[in-house]
Amino acid sequence: MASNLSEDNANADASSPSQSQNILKLKDDGNELYVAKDYVSAIAKYTEAIELDGSNALVWANRAACRLAVKEYEEALADAMKATDLDPTYSKAWARRAAAHEALRQYSESKVMWEKALEALPSGPDLSQTDKRLKTQYEANIKAMNVAIGREGKAATVTSAEFSQLAPGAVEVQKDSGNLPWEVARSMLEDLSTRNDPNSSEWTAGMEGLKELKTQFQENGQQVSVGKLGVIDMFTSAIMRDTRIFRISEEDFLIKFFDQLQLERKQWKAWPGNTDLEVIKREALERLEKEGRETVRLALNIAVRWVSFLPSCDGANILKRPSSSCVCSEWIMSGFLSTRIEPDFEVAIDHLQRALDVINWGREVWKDVPRKERGVIFTTTFKRGIWNMLLSATLQAHVSISTKNASEPKDDLEAKSKERELLENINKHASGILKDLEEDSLDPKEFDGPLDPGFRWSFFDNIRGNAFACTGYYHVQLAEANKADQDKFYLHMLTASKCYYKAAGGFSEDDYNHTWYLSCAFEYMVPIGPPTGLVLEVLEKIRVSEPKSKSLWFREPGMAREDQAKAYERLKVIEDRVKELIRDGKMKTDEKFDFGKVQEGLGRLASS
Image 1 (spheres, helix red, strand yellow):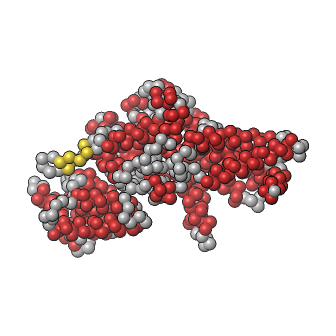
Image 2: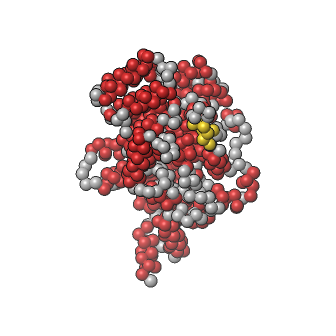
Image 3: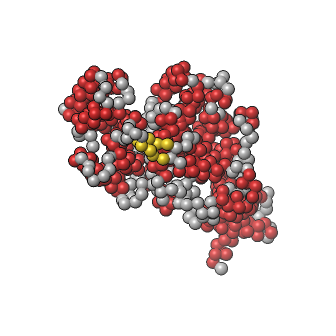
């Protein structure tokens, strides 16, 4: 991969003859130390050269090669990203990014970077021996990454069928078909088209924006990207509204998305994805003095938005760290994709937490600055949107690790400790969000114009519903852990059922979350014997809402979950049986619910 730095050196000298002798000496010394396998000393030499002139892509790439050799993979990735930012035509810089991703076990991202490296090589029949060797190497590595991700010979992006295997239950399709929830809603309510339906318009606008991205070559042969700005904002805004909007409708979506990110990052001088958070804070304040608030705001916006969306995607994974608005965008997208494509929940949590940290920092540092000058990423609703994504990622991480722990016979104390930590973090984040919602009233003055009808659902009601659902999950886990203590078990199950009931109220009747959380409330209230009238009320609400959500959300083949459909059918049978027992005088609405009587009747019905 990086065995011949002298070739790189020759290329760099040819393209930049004006470099100072001092920098050339440092670079040559670094190359010699690399060949001698004294990687730590080589890193020191390259660092000196970078401090004198940080605009040389080759030096950054050479330091990345050394850091790969000493297994400093995240640092190597940051250096390689800087090199590709400085010179997108430098194939070996892309190769070092690919190698860093591979070392971090981010195989989809690695594959995309190897493809970038291949694209950056000269084309045509008259390749040099070096370029022929690199071409063969890059093609072999692409195939190796296909094997690593279990999809040899397929496209780098994820098709609908593949996605459903990676993230069961996700709303993900290959092409818009007229059956997607927002398309169905539009056909049901004509006036939606005049109300700027947010769940579809932002995502669609983002996809249209990607189509405008083009590659051009300047007179000097340098490759540049030209396209529409603000596309990353469109995607992250759609995701924060409702993560279920996410879908891949183009085969090369991830590659296009990555190129768009590169364009916007360069335009706003955003920090690279792996930049340390403290460095971003320090440099943001320094840049504020030199460049003004607008430049810093846009840079932070991209970084925060990308990291939260893309938890595992540099083209599939820049998920590892970014700039203020630019940095925010990067973290959001990075975090989100890390929960969807080859899920890595630790990466997702890390990116989303970083986005939240920089937003809370900015809100405090610039608390006296008018909202329009600070930017949307520092508003209460934006902060809460990221916090909600962090809560969901933490829940997914706990489900993943608890499932793994339950299936392994050996006691892994570290894994058990991590499981408990995640569970407590679920409760901490959910409680914090609910408190935040109590303290925040929807003040139209905080926004630039009139709010669309879905805004309250997205940033208030739905988030409240998710927080209550996660709190319910927390208490279910505690109930399971305290089965031997009847009083504690009863208390946690009671709390869980109440939380899930409240969670359902955070979603409209035609949202499948409303129906699902009501069914969870029923499941956890039955063991504690609530009044029969309350049980019947919940069952009736499920029966009324289920067909509404089905008509809106489950028209597309593959969207509906068979296990849920069977569960709802069973609940209808239970409701009918309860009503029958009440009519026969064998149950009373004000008495404790006796599920045993219901089950007896169900058994007889099944046998007959």
